[in-house]
Picture 1 (tube, rainbow, N blue to C red):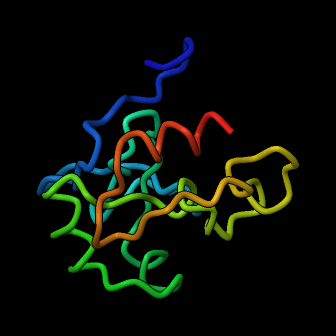
Picture 2: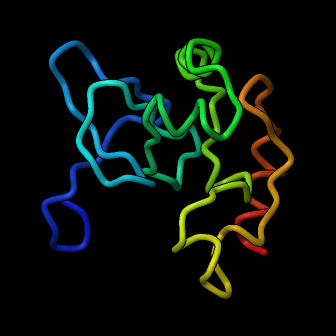
Length: 115
């Protein structure tokens, strides 16, 4: 686990396999329709319903994830959850130059996360 918890680490850009359930960063439910962020330092996953509510097409996100090019809402500074929106110094103030369809240069991601 991570930091002494039982939270599993998933491969970056991982999409839940059939029968596998992953945690959604927003609703905290274990679901089978979750995508994990492609950012190397992030382990956040988002479920289909929240991806769609935020305004992205889940199937397009799955395809981008399989290419290692899906970056979560938290990393892009777009996460609507209360923790990300209400926490000063959270990642939500670090607008990464990326979308779910285009991978950023690794140096840009590292610079944005270090800021």
